[in-house]
Every structure is written in structure tokens, then in C-alpha cells.
Amino acid sequence: MHEGDGRVSARKTSGGCLCGAVRYEIEGPLPPPSACHCSQCRRHHGALGIYTLAPAERYKIKGDRNLAWFESSPGIRRGFCRVCGSKLFWERIGSGQLDVTMGSIDPPSGLRIGRHIHLEDAGDYYDPPSR
Image (cartoon, rainbow, N blue to C red; front, side):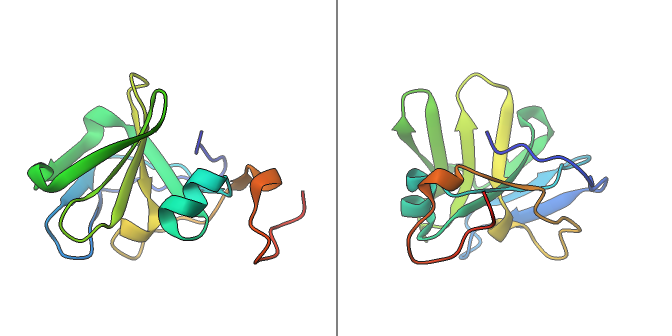
């Protein structure tokens, strides 16, 4: 869902939630993020959601006891810190991929948005890119 195209970052990436209860590292390259304008991402984040992704086996998650999951639609779940509520992950269950929110990545990310998706669902409170 949140795959991008274009430039790829080839380093180890780290990040975590606002309070530090959940931290992660991702080994290897990350594709440019996608900005998702769907109504679920907007409700979950309070605005559009911006994600990049990697195979799930490339993640090392510390503090996973503080990671909570919400199945937002059949076969889709969203991971967040149960302590501070930070939005961290999006997953199509069984895909082997795990999307990570750009806002949770430690700067500098070295990435730029590669595409916008679900523009037809964009909120009426901002001007999305041209359709």
C-alpha cells in the first residue's frame, strides 16, 4: 500500500515513539515514502500518514511489550505505543512487509516523499497535490 518509487536510503535506520518505550532499527535500504490521504490514515494520525517500508525480518524492535496493535480493517493492522500513543507501524497481515511512519524515524532520514496515494479521500482542510 505505502510503497514508493525513486531514491532509496541504504543505511541502518533507527526510530521510535515519543516517550522512548518502543525503539526500532531497520537494516538496509528503504524506498521513498508514500503519503497516504485515506480516511483511516487521516483519523489515525490526525492528518495524512507518511510511510516507508521494509521486509519485517529487517526490523529489530525494542520494548515490543509496549507496542499495541489495532486491526483497522480486515487483514490490516496499525501499531502504536501503548504508553504515549505514537503511531509507528502499518501492516498488511501476512505480507512479510512492515511499513513505518516517517514521523517516528530519527533524523536525518535521507528520504523524500515518492508519491501520494488515495488522493480521492484527501481531507477538505488542505490542498493535496494535483490528482
